[in-house]
Length: 494
Image (cartoon, rainbow, N blue to C red; front, side, top):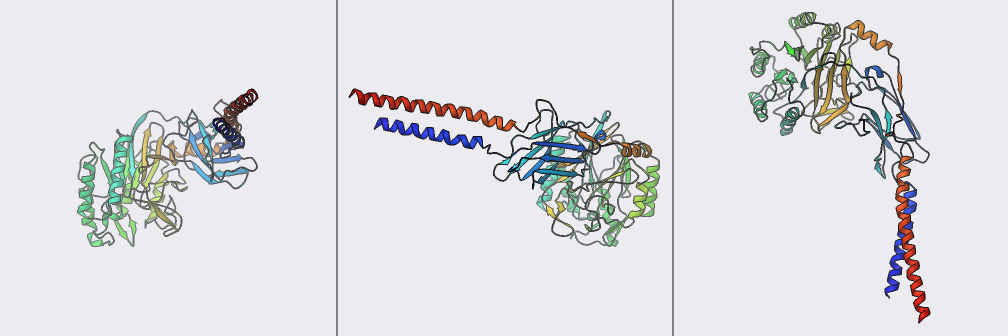
């Protein structure tokens, strides 16, 4: 009986080991690319746009792929979201990526992660070495934060998102010089909402100054729906009484200027509203133009304005309905004369991961969609042109002697948005035009270092697993033979 039991165990072990061999040999995991490459449109200026190509073997099981920036060790760049994600429908993938973002300075690879429904994301990426040039930024001058659309007073979720943002600023940029709120800090012109703002800020000690641009919400009646032109001036005064002035003065208008990390900053607020559209008085337009004329054109100018100009950044297209500025043509004409303006807009709540997140004026200036803290919109079903998402986004802006880095951040998850990472060299118009029109595309070739993933490396790992299984099977077989021979010898002796 004892011998029979031993033989049964040996047989089970042997069959189990032999059964493992086919599954290991079949390579049961998500198929990796046989080859992949990325051709930059403008690698000299570290622009991320380009053409991605990938080949997979016949019979592959990959159903989608994601691209990530990778560090020098070949791991995902810490804290960054995916650069691009798309389905796989054939053995060859070619995708033109119209990215308007930049390649992060510490990115060495573009990592390709394939994914299948059965096995999930492949643990080992295919690595494409990057040859994007290094941009000379000069010394760091400082950093500030730009957010929009807090809507304090509308819900507990708005309060929670605001506090999350403040805590993230304290942890990520403890030396930040300012937090700029590009409108709709409160849900309506209600004193209780302003007092709520102050109480929440008091929970986080040693915050940088928080400057605010008025949005349409700062002029709405406490019900959050009604705009009363006769109450406009009183609501404006409530706003002016509850924001700090950089020079400690009492503000008298919704527009003012100061210096931020050594650069001019302009707060630009509407003088009135007509049918939901912001209206800027001729006096303010004249002030804006004279202010820009007096500024050194080779230094960046930060302009903060709640409503976006129509058909510029994400959310402002005619079909999306958030380009609510009545005299937008006059404002656009003024800004377009100055290539060093960096304009931050709020209002639409549109996610920064939209391809239209940044807009380039013909004259060289840029506009940025600042998304929102309270909630986000994205393209999809529903009106106006999208649907609402949970989330909280804003920018960290780092000022250097020769460049400005604008980094999109998801405060809710603590991640950097790879699609909203912009390294900008602010120059005068003639030099900038020359740089943008003479650059030739270059190809990023796969790296040939030892860290490069070859298509056969995953098969080698399986072979390493096969060998121990074979050894175990051999030992079980030997044990079986020994037990069988002893049993035979005993019977012969008897």
